[in-house]
Image 1 (cartoon, rainbow, N blue to C red):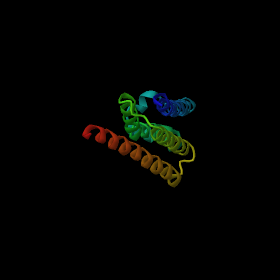
Image 2 (image 1 turned 135 degrees about the vertical axis):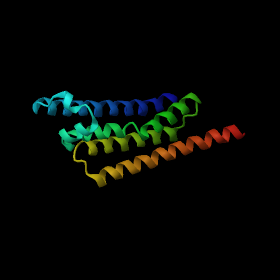
Image 3 (image 1 turned 45 degrees about the vertical axis):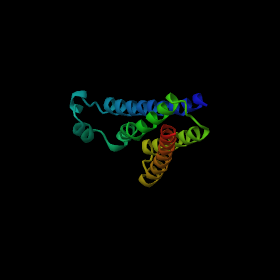
Image 4 (image 1 turned 120 degrees about the horizontal axis):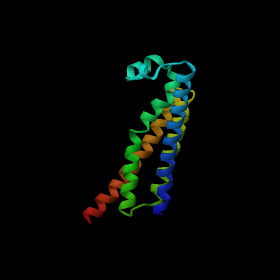
Length: 144
């Protein structure tokens, strides 16, 4: 069961790599095709001013992948360390990853805010269920 939880963790890492790759490809492609000098992009306001939003969508999503997914990594690693992984944990972990994949695809392509928010909200709720389910078991064990 423990190794089953590693698969969604690796899938989340792979998603992060894919978004990073898309971001790098879009930014570099735009910078090269528009002959923008790299030094003119030394601060975030300069990047925002010179690169259009659609070029930045993947960068915005990459930032988002360093927020709540950290909670996901922590709870998964904690469950693995404590040898407390259940089938419910694995299902919730995969549901979170699937929600984040949908969120990232929307964010990096059409960036439809309502659709993106729905995927974000659903995956966030799943994550918090995973967290509180894990916390309840740890507290129960500590008190027994």
